[in-house]
Image (cartoon, rainbow, N blue to C red; front, side, top):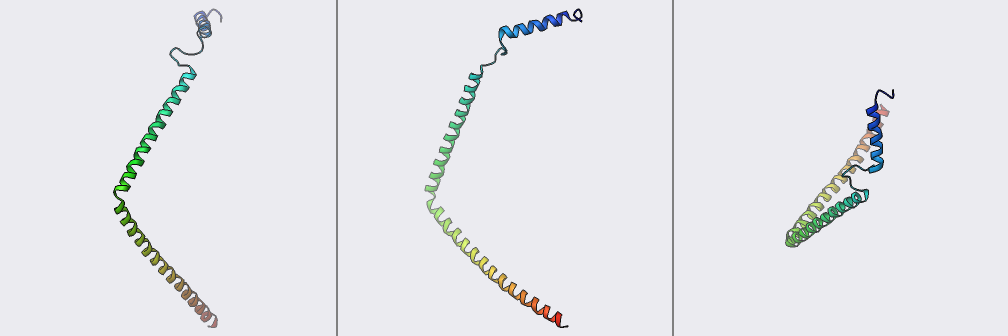
Length: 118
């Protein structure tokens, strides 16, 4: 087989020697340290952007809360009254369920006694 592919063998040897001479890095590739620095810089830039956006949002929220202090106070009073009414309704329902449970147990016992006596 040495005679069949002389150009292939010569090209393969030239490519191996070329890689050894030029290095294993392709042309145009950045060194690893430069890539690492670039990634860190992009991450730092993104974190800075998020911090500034968060600060702006917090400032706007604080300003809105301050401007609408009276509306928020009245809404709080309204919601607390609704919550108290709901809690009272649920307490009444719970008491009714307890009474219903006692009545059902008494009915069951009476039915069982009637069934046993007949």
